[in-house]
Length: 118
Image (cartoon, rainbow, N blue to C red; front, side, top):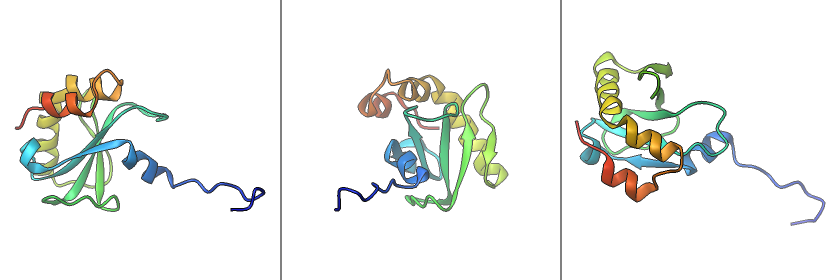
């Protein structure tokens, strides 16, 4: 690398995923994979990324985003009503743990141990 070449940054969605933990259906009880993360440099409040495809898929180009607080609401991307309701119920059940991880109080192991399945 030439000393005068600028360092290329990864797209923000790749950085977001790097800072997120993926959770498969076997651990959440949801029909799809979800991602939860830490605040890092985010300019938004805590949220969960949801893969729209059921199963153990992790396709960032096929996601919806659901807020955690004050109440779980769809804020980006389409999501079938039944899937949204399931994600909302899961978030409500696990809000304290998700927020603790977001705030950096809980690490990934704490997150995994504290989450409840729906």
